[in-house]
Image 1 (tube, helix red, strand yellow):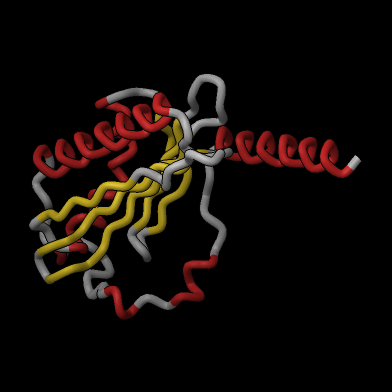
Image 2 (cartoon, rainbow, N blue to C red; image 1 turned 120 degrees about the horizontal axis):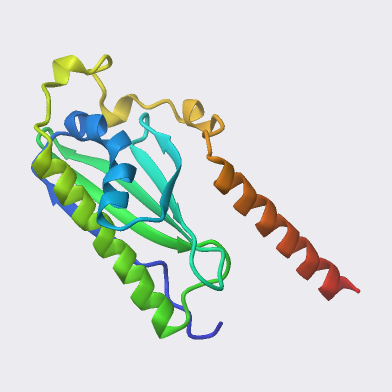
Length: 170
């Protein structure tokens, strides 16, 4: 994989507070599926503002799309989107094109979610005193809840890696 490129990324800056976007984050996977079907939620962590979504693709185990919310200012939040391959890297032009389409789908879903839903006041959120500097790094080490398809994908990846390792060591 000499000609591989880094994982495709996209950053968006929106004029909404981090607290307001954290309220909408759990609904993002369903909004992504309204734009284009086939995406499943892998994990969500509201403490660090991260959502992971999986999409299976033909002839591969698919991709993982990681969406992070980053605090910039009290009413400005940066949304970072990264597309990762489950196995291998992006080294073919059609793979990069597919990754860019995933970025477009997620960007459109974020836009739809923010524009269609009135964002409630932060007082409705139970822990409205959230600030990025108050994150305890050890609290984010808990196991994320995953769907059954994500567990199957993990098992398949483990089996494939085991077969490859046995092949090379024999």
